[in-house]
Image (tube, rainbow, N blue to C red):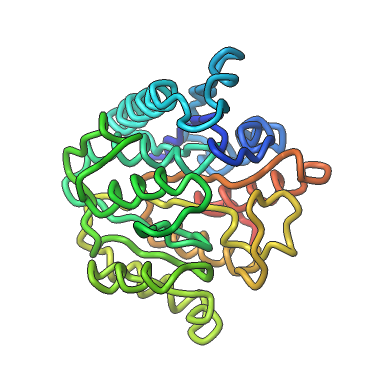
Length: 303
């Protein structure tokens, strides 16, 4: 039986320091040929479903970007729709491929997945750990704090007070790959909660293939594994459209190898991709690279 893949876009932008073109990324991915790429991956017996994009209307966009605090009810509504559709797609035995948008989409996606899987693992390709700390004031830091609490199953606050996880992620089921921009307190929190981290230096020393092999073994007893891919894990000097570029990251080749190994292992049961700012991109180059990466995760012959 061929793969049953489902595309869902979430046009949610960064709230406090908006990267103006981030919410356009789902359209850019489609324009770069995502559906055609995935259909080729599925083969004759597979099928690609496209559930369109969850979008803000003009009034909601204005309200979201008002001075602090942002309109959390609008954000909660978007995340609720994301949660419901992610859960529906999973119930239909389809593999969700959620396109951001901002990293905040993870809140809705993981909530929906938690209703289906009893013991879910999560692989995060990300330059940041997003574990936060009480003394850090950074890009929508209170939202990142909620994201952290969602990931490791702590009590939720503010933005996520309406969100409840049926089966919260265990911190021991989290794996970060490519991290290189984090605080000492985040490292201490990761050690305390036994979150597995492969920094960019680990990638350099061990090689991406070894890291993926270890990750596959590490999450082998999970009944579902979610891939969260923030394009800032890539070297900021190599891709013009990265919304929050940081140098000395993974190369496109390394991430292609990683996606190919994950496909061969049959490990990934859901995925999300975010962190591309279309207003910074050049001729949709980043969108095209994104499509190649997503395709490789599902069997495209790009290597």
